[in-house]
Image (tube, rainbow, N blue to C red):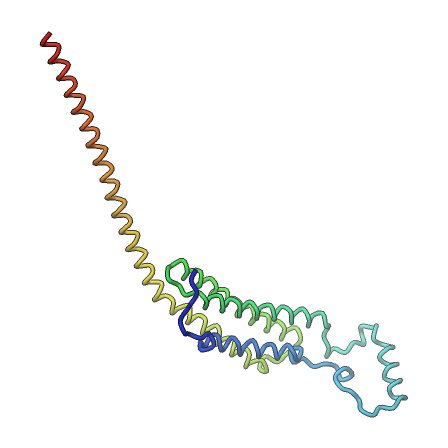
Length: 227
């Protein structure tokens, strides 16, 4: 496998630029815990609260925190948020990695082009995984998908860009396939020629042995007659 050595910069390619923008936008969304609403008790700090009021609030929270029917439904378990956050981070990392690997391969033959195609397919698959995960999170914690439209539009754009990049390789693929076909035909011609040459050599050896045996037989007959 050879690595691209020309002056082309990765950042100059739109599918890489957009992937970087997408990763940043999704990461910012993760920083905000998916933009979810938390309970007012947890979201706001009350300024200049009196000690008496603080004790009343603490008493209410402590009294009901272990009773599930009093849990505020505007909040969601931290384990779910943490799990989904790690899942999305992993998908984003895989997406970037697969794009980088695919772009690092400067294909000079069909095998290397096929290897690049594998990474391109994986990157497109990562985009669909990310889309599915975001939609699942939105459904689970009742998020408005309209608020996520910038991310989803960026994600759809990345899918389109990656498919276009993969499609552009088809011209190179046809060239490599033609070259490979010509090489196979030339190899077949050379192999056929060698086989013919080998068969002829064997044939000549057989003829030579037959002639030699015939000459020996004639010599023996001649000697017998002389006697």
